Length: 420
Ligand code: NAD
Image (cartoon, rainbow, N blue to C red; front, side, top):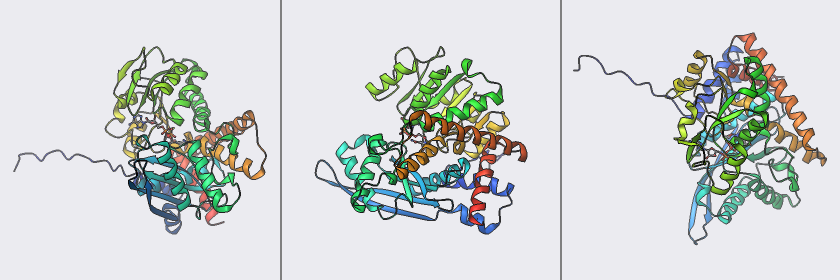
């Protein structure tokens, strides 16, 4: 027997489904939500698992696992992105669907949450293979999606082209063009102007309000961004336009640092040409994960879940963390950041601009009446600013952090709809 017992290592639960459940329970306790309603709102209403057999370009057949989860349709048809990633699981998709339910309720758009995913690595698929996979998936879920039921959108590794394939496949089953079945599609098919930039733009609107509260001047602020895809790269450009010095950026291949500020328009051109931010001239290379530890005012996780954990939360030196990604911070890390008085703008608030403009796109498709870019951005700003202040006031009222406050608002709205 050793003289002293070895120190017990606390292992963090990184299952996103358990994490979203913990976040839900904290707010449900504040709201004294009854047990039955907790059960209704905690669990997904429907989840399907699929196996998609695809003929590859070399003639072989491969089978891909795929999912579509509908978390809650209490407040309207469900809305949610489709993710293409090797690590996609049913639990991850279910957690992401729940986050969208809370997000839609928080910004008060009449949607519930859904999510889809295909376990694949699109970087190792040809365009034709990706099209066959997407169309097969769309066909399999065609009876479950639709403008009044469930409306997919882009997420990690999917884009406007993916949405166009889904819309086209779905429209083959309805025998007429049905643009409102997806959002985030190209504008020539009924996509909304400004949808591509919406998640990042919404994040910027929230960040502006939060900075004012914090007494931080964006014109002299510095920022670091993890992830340089749909959301992260647009965020970088919007921050650049705003006068914020972006000093650190990373993607899955590597990170870069330049304390004087990275030339973002040049970095966007470099990424378009090389496929990565890695080795961008004039910057020091850093390991991908180190971008989170950058000494800066604003940190923007814009990649995947579980990036800020109890392993690295102690090293975060930003004043504000704006969660452009879904689920980037674990509950343990949340507590650590809160003790350090870091202001965390939670995902269901910070990246809700995407689903808000998706809602605008759906409205425009149904009306067949399209708005100009300024109109979309004006409406988006209105929603994001109002929502930020609602969260801020709720946090003050309950004496809680912004995440709990955002959930209190969202769950409170779902409760009213579930038991009117
Ligand atoms: P994307 O696939 O376009 O980009 C993801 C980026 O993250 C890529 O640059 C990738 O290289 C990088 N990345 C992956 N792993 C990384 C790591 N370990 N370290 C650093 N970088 C890493 O995806 P996206 O659409 O920009 O989505 C990013 C996040 O934003 C996700 O959490 C997504 O759910 C969320 N989100 C997306 C939208 C949308 O409309 N696309 C809306 C709301 C929220």
